[in-house]
Image (tube, rainbow over all chains, first blue to last red; front, side, top):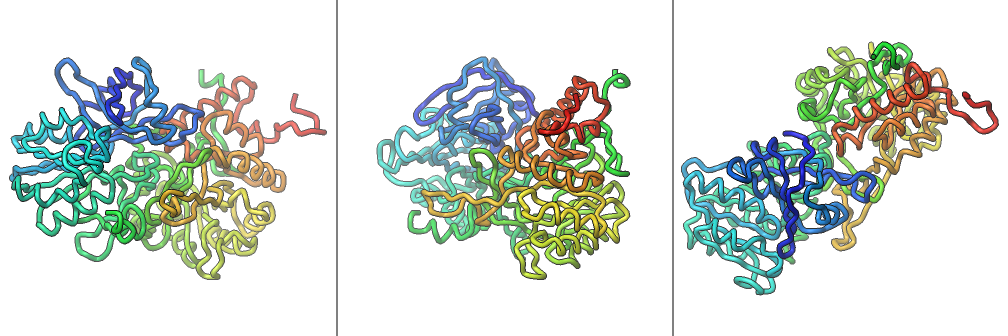
Length: 280
Length: 314
């Protein structure tokens, strides 16, 4: 990982999201899908901790070589500040952080399941999987049309794609988790990758477990340092030998975990499984 | 250039450190993560995460929430246990800086057992006894709730350790000066003032606590005035006793505040989590302050606080 003061190339608003493009070759060259960056808030402001974002794109060659992109929706003082950042300004960035998605060696048919801003790292993943000769299908979800992350780009990247919105304003009406079993059958899915709110990840894990399909999930929860110093981003991960679970750091051992190893009744908070059930 | 300028070296009554800047407990990982991010050469020492005898899994998630002027956290002593700590973490920490091991426990026996395992290990220059922890043995909320109990634990560790022992006490303790004195009388070499303020936050939309552990600790800018006052009161009571103090320090001026209040060294914690270069910023800031004031070392700041009714230092 590197810490750099990176120049902002552009801040672009599209739908509910902002995409920030940075000139950060030291980070872009090493970045893998599923990894993230930590951006320092302005000193003396309302935000104290770094804000962490999945990497959406990292260009290693061509005219955009050395650039890095991440997308976010404004949810508090840190993201509001970033949304107001200007081109040619600078941000203090650490990255790439965490352990990204692993690529399948033999299996070919990959289904990428994303909801909200979780779709952003899946675009990066789709490119890398395609470069390795894998077939990429996508299930993309959001509350409404504004929240569907870059649908045109998703359609370009995926062999098969289905979009769902809760209000039916784009694609089918409903949630990606409900559409998952049928999509897996229809497209002959062999591997699943997911980045979405925890309730959706939990259901993706359940469906894949029942069907014995390997699944990797990128989790998101409160994080402090992002570089492994503080143990604030612990995720309960079941031991391989079935003797219980340990708390692993989302920022070092994650944020991507094998879906079968996450102790879903303890993530993202104690008793989450029961409480999440009525709402889905 | 260096010969002409002030030194950062400090002497905590026999414990000599190359700098008064110390990484606080729980803010330096396992000795692997700082590489390339934190310039450890500016650190006089690094305090390890708190170590118990057996491994502890720690608090359930979420473990951190941001509040307007500090972070609320509960890690719940997650650590691999004393044996694994000594074998795996300590050697890596020791390559970065001299190590102060934060010794924790739920009983007097556990503190003693942990201290016995760590005190003579290579790279360990001191022990910090984390006393603001639940006393499982006597079923009390904290070991430092009563001066005699704090002193009993600190004294037992001090009697067996071959390195200086610092009793860590929270600044909000109503009996702080009395407890500090009792710990020193029982054998503690020095004191460490710091740690978080008790705190809690609630997520109103979900109607649940922000932390999985329900309650936690606030650290960062919010606790700095408390740390300055606590340091001032302890140093006034026990001027000969070395005090390490921490609480929301992120730059040189904030460190100088604590040094003027009576600290012999300054711990940096939360600031490292946001800015891994914070220790360097603090060290450079102290140097600059000393140079501008014409002082030779951080120790020269101690006792320089101009109080009303007393003659200032000029």
